[in-house]
Length: 189
Image (cartoon, rainbow, N blue to C red):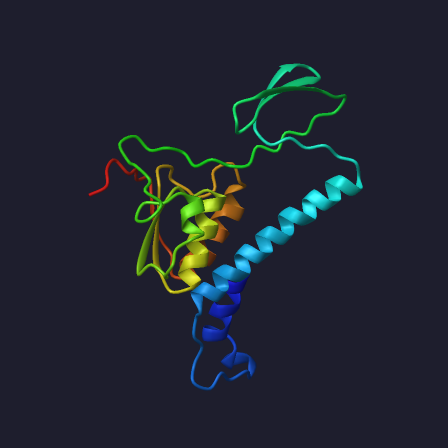
């Protein structure tokens, strides 16, 4: 949301009669601090809702072992077995690994690393035109990066209605994001 406001202040406010004398500056450390505060608040808010509504949650790696039983391996490698009438599996996300390409979370990053840059990259290559890659590409584009998205398929957002995906691609292109569809990444030099 903050990157959208920054972009609007730079490109849209004057059309609306809002003049920012002296221009608009980005304070990325303050923006990142606000992001971290929001994430912490959301996490604590969910934990509070769980407690209030008597929902038990377990952190770890889960595996369904029976229809109503799950095995959870915790971070300290202990196994817990939980039986319940209803089980909600909230898996989070994990970035796909590309053969021969190591993520150092500095120059080559996953979505987690892309949320933690200490400066706005001059240019950014996003591999994969799924929801998360496009969202992060859009954020950094609005903050000033020259963003190119490379997707192996011939379209963005596989699994999403083609007309919607095409309209969204046009919106992102207007924002300045370049697309190389039907292309793959084999190595990094």
